[in-house]
Length: 259
Image (cartoon, rainbow, N blue to C red; front, side, top):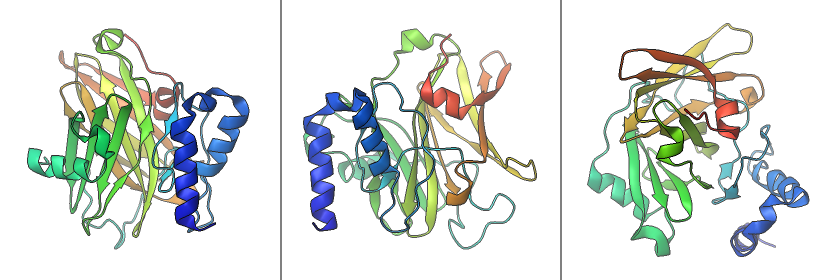
């Protein structure tokens, strides 16, 4: 079986029998598939399956494991233009990315909730009737979907200070690995900072997320070998100037923080 035939078989199985992902044996099989990189032979550590989890682009998306970042101390040529501070993405540019990322039958109903640019790259999170889709545009113009589809927590449930991390996938490009993060925020949260620390405490990096209309998103380079050791936390800033710090990304990914 060729790689294209394998991809087609996996996608067909996932879309036709979504209820199976709730069964223990199916989850084990699913995790073994999405955590296997055919190109590198590396399988990052995966967390416990999130409620309502379905897998979209399994050929390119890896289930999120421990938080990771490449070169916490020194960068290098890979992702050299990445910055911790995001820039805006125009509505036309974001729509162009979504058209190349979201399945044709959902393009017309896809709602772009947040997007950003960092250096030569763009990242967009769209919500469709089937859930969340994250779309990454590489420096060379390639667009890749890394999708985690789930039943999103409602704004009413999040209240003023709740937060849901519904996407935290790892993606490989021709420059290495990156982490794609997206989520939903309570009405009083204005800013989100994501800090990644090496387990031994020798280095760390903070990325400032893009926040728009109750949603947030950020992406950052990651090294594949730190997947089980680095520690990622979120800090939230509220409208009254107060902050909520040291929220574990791993725990938020498994269960949202409700107000």
